[in-house]
Image 1: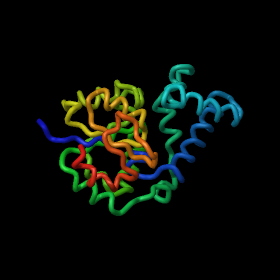
Image 2: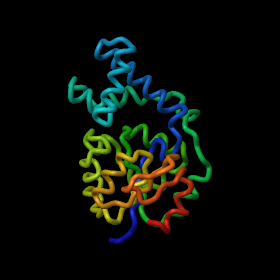
Image 3: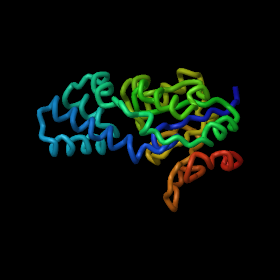
Image 4: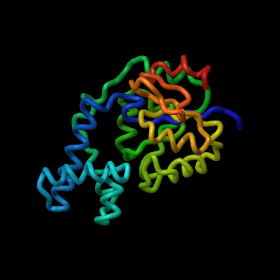
Length: 212
């Protein structure tokens, strides 16, 4: 099978999570650390950031050093009573994704219940063949290689047929090392050598297809 496979990150790739969603998640994670590790807000916030920087995800540090139950953590830190007002939907996104030839999947470090809720609010949930979340990668977040390999094995895809679309350059480095083509969604002026195409917004993707 030589059909192209588009692998999309979710947050800050398919939608802008910076204004509302990421601050909410950060507050929820800090509160979780406060409650379950008996820390002050300041100490909990510092530990959250430290684990995120050291391991790529706060959860990884919590599992490694505190034996935290990942499902408990993910459920309690990804509650969004006001999610419909927090997701910034770009009406043209659906048309852009439908115009791309090949299969499409979402590969996210977020939990499944959150990823599915966001995709539904973006009105693009029916366009994806799979939503591969942190649970499916056995809580080994991007940029770790194991999640990528699990996704490829699950669908029997070859990395050479895949295009990874991401806002995280670090995650794209793993994708490139596995043999994928890479699209970096970024406002940066220059792209690292492992990035095949840089776009400022996922809406620019159809124009970049020819370069891939």
